Amino acid sequence: QSHVGGMTTNQLTQGILQALALDYGEDYGRGYFSALNELVLANYLKQHRADITSFKKLHSYVSDRDAYRRIGNVDDWEKTRHLAGIVDKLAQVTPLNVAKGTPGVHSDALAHQIDLPRMLSERQVVYFYLSSAQEQTTVPKVAKLALFSLLTAAAKRGKHEKNRVYVFVDEFQRVIADNIRIFLEQARSMKLHFILANQTVAQLNIHKTDLTDVVESCTAFKQSFRASDGPSIKRLIETSGEGLYHSLSWTQLLNDSFMESDDEALSVQIAMKQSPDGYAQAKVKEEAGPLLEKNSIIEVSALPLASFVKFTEGSGYTQQSGHWTTVLSEYHITEALFGVREEADWPATSSRTILVSPEEETPPVGGKFIEKKVSIAKPDVPEGFEEEFSRRLGEAAEGMPPPPKQTPPPAPNGTTRKKKRKPHARPMPPQEPTP
Image 1 (cartoon, rainbow, N blue to C red):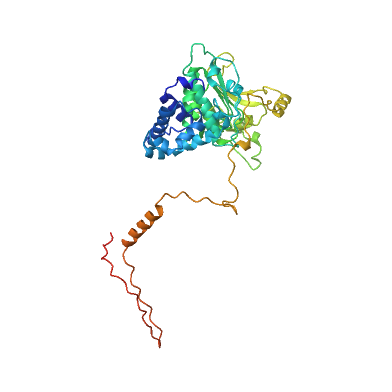
Image 2: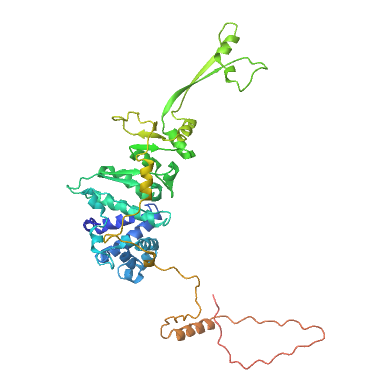
């Protein structure tokens, strides 16, 4: 990205750690390993930043123990294998590792690469097609890298970079992590606007991270197309506001002809007719309750084209006082046009396209670990290893206590046993007591 060159090493280090969710927190334990990730990555970037132009190049360093031995403590390197594992996954994503001099890549591809900082000054549409069904652990990392790249670029806006950027994130729950809070809390002040889509409210509380209240407070417009699960219904009820409700109770005489299914048989008017003076004793109770009821939510959710909307600010046509409002809305395109776009092919490849084929990936391991008639290379044994090994075994044997004497089992009745003659043995030096 074009703005990376203007970032300090500390800014770049912390941006990468935040994007890859390698900042675990500041409490005891988590803060220790977060600091180790930052220390090791910062040491690599300080020493080799000019040479690290891709995640593939970065992985060649973070996976090399000897490369870190010269710049830091190897024990710290050992405790940051989570960092190396994530960088390894990103190193295998070909489009993320295209740089100047990459074999087989046309210069047009580099000239037209996705540069998120450029969106602040040039009007354009950038589309990321990330299939979470195929790469469930890699896709969220790529998405958060793009988001943090845009956020860090917006934080360094120039005077000529005045564009507002609208970011649409489908299946938002796939990128939820604690570090996403910074987007929702600071994005609007940087002229970044997010349109987030997820299936249910419960999906905002996953991976021990609850963003429900943050999303509620940092978004100006909310639309719930269907609330059929318990948490979504409960959330609508709790955030709908309160209203005053009155309940009426009275006493009425009944006889054997009363049927519970007859609702008209129970009424204040009938109780008044039963009274000699035409009056009925009744009680009125007033209590507060939610404006939306559970049955109403279920009924509206079952209606086609119906949804609940909520506007934080009352302005212009949005004069709903901040309450949930039921609306009927059409689709933004026709069904026929949707079908045409769904069946459309991807654009044809050109010199600006990087097409990744399975042949370019690391081949999978064969079904058999050892194939027949395949010579196995002998290990590279250092010179003098066998002599040293034999010497160490001898020293270990001398330090062992003598084996306990075995008493022969008693001979059966009527038989005798003869002792075997032992070969002459030299006297052994006295054994030192073992600890």
